[in-house]
Image (cartoon, rainbow, N blue to C red):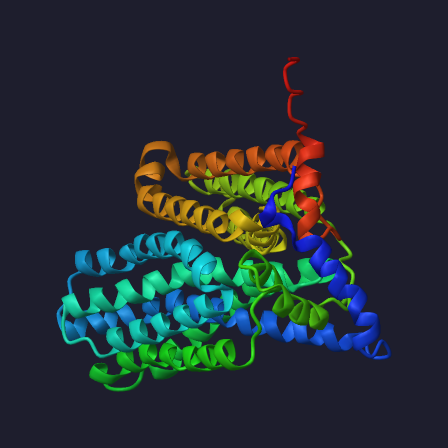
Length: 401
């Protein structure tokens, strides 16, 4: 049974009907282009997140030499970012619900700007840690708010396409950080790492301007807070359809999990062969390892990279969407930190091949979970999700009085 928080469906339907009278139907791409522009703008948070995530890999040696930071301190500095982003992801759900999706994007931009600027200007380890604290919290905000915003602003037929943009944007940010590291490495040591990190303060200016001046609030958040007229106005812009999703969520997730499991299994096997002394097959085992690693990245990017963020944000009811996405992101950051901090101990205990066999088993378990528990959501409105899961897992009938 729906409560007062789930009144968005008839409202958005009414807005769609109003489109036939208020919007020129000879230009159906207008609203679609606007939805795409909003999704790209929101995905700036992912570009900035990717840049912040990757830039330290090239800057850290110059930071150590310039500021006298030890190896142990730099490990703590980099590892702590995941913990800070965990805090940010939990706080972001609350902020999205209270302040709105659009204002939370602007807040994350302000924190990205402050964190990058503070880190670039640091004169010691404590200042570095403070800057990374702010930037890490901003990363948590960005990981939560972009999927929620896009899920709520996109029409059902193009939500899968639009929701994949943050993943592409994040990888693009990492690539840009590597390019910046390479291009600036030849500058004086007291300047190069500061520019590498400081460049990350530029995109947040554009993101904040877009969020405050151009991007609308999502109609579903407006409904949740009683702004029905504003919600109708916003929905009438983005209701026209964009481009049909050709593949469903389930096929992409199943293909991704299956491909990840197979590639990790092959990687583990090739590593075991390459470690065998006198086998004479090291050359093909090394080539197979590289190919398997590339296959893993490709299959991950096919489904579990972009789709899982979109799926998690679209299946939750409106009143829980932001906080639920925050909890999911927090779980992701916890597992990321756990894998990073246990990998060396794990392969020392189980061997490198055994470690990847274990990861392959986890991917196979993910395939089983998707197959058994996750229904297809392609083409469905966010308002239909609750009924979809109720149908998939019917509740027990009430006891007879």
